[in-house]
Amino acid sequence: NGQKINVDNKELVINMTSDDNKNKIIFAGLTYELQSGLGIGSGIYSGKVNGYTQNSGAVPVIDISQNIIGINIYYDEFPAQIVGEYYILLNKDLLAIDKKQYQSSGYFIQTSYEFNEKYRPYIRFEGIVPEKSDPYAKSLIGEEKLLRLIYGVMYNLSESAIKIEGILEYFGRLYGLTRSELRE
Image 1 (cartoon, rainbow, N blue to C red):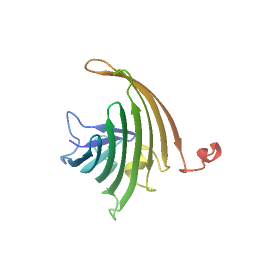
Image 2: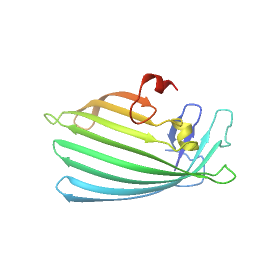
Image 3: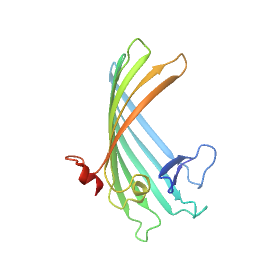
């Protein structure tokens, strides 16, 4: 099943037990480990995403054909881990007369280190750069660039983990952010 957007809540919903359209997603990925712990990979995703408001009921207000191309690089040699990923989102607006295609992008880099095989503090920097008027990005984050600094610690239990996380979030230009510019 694909995804859908709850436009009222700006929330991407995964259709785990049902599907709002008959389109199924296709995903393929390939990873190659160059040497112990160091690897690269890429992936491609293709699907359809519909967005709904409470007032629209079962009629989508957003109808997107989506292709995502991604690349990643990682170093994962216990106890250290560094992961970086970059994505290009190609979103075609199927409700528009001209069926315009938009290109947005997203990326992150994360590093962590495990202590005593129990505690793993981490920090991640991520960004989303939407193309102006991209209906997919606009319905989820708006039209401004989004930057996040995410930090936390994970405590490993025997079969699961407990995670405490904090997020600093900024909207606006990628560099030279000021409070007045963020309010614009």
